[in-house]
Amino acid sequence: MPKGYWIASIDVNDPDGYKTYVAANAAAFRKYGAKFVVRGGRFELREGTSRSRNVVLEFKDYATALSCYDSAEYRTASALRQGNSVANLIIIEGYDGDQP
Image 1: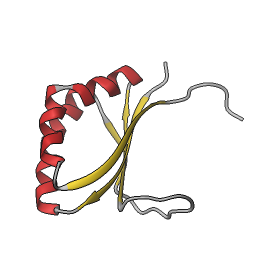
Image 2: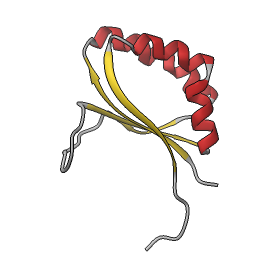
Image 3: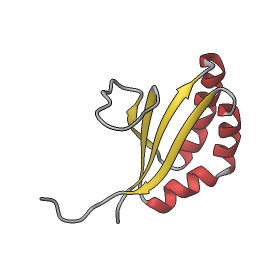
Image 4: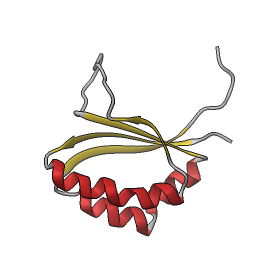
């Protein structure tokens, strides 16, 4: 079964306020077994547009990734993010088929 991922691009406009979101999202991420694959590391934009911070979270499957986002724990955390950042977030199913 393919894994599920959150892919987020974020501009943080209030770093102190954003820290409250980061502290609160840990409860949801622990509960749903999220693993950070990317967490704000260096990047070089080669095409398109981007925000200043990028995050990729891995979940055991797509359904779990959706459940985490829809959970009461994450709704509480997400409310803390509002006003402190602007984000694009997609939830996507991974690929576990044949490789070249």
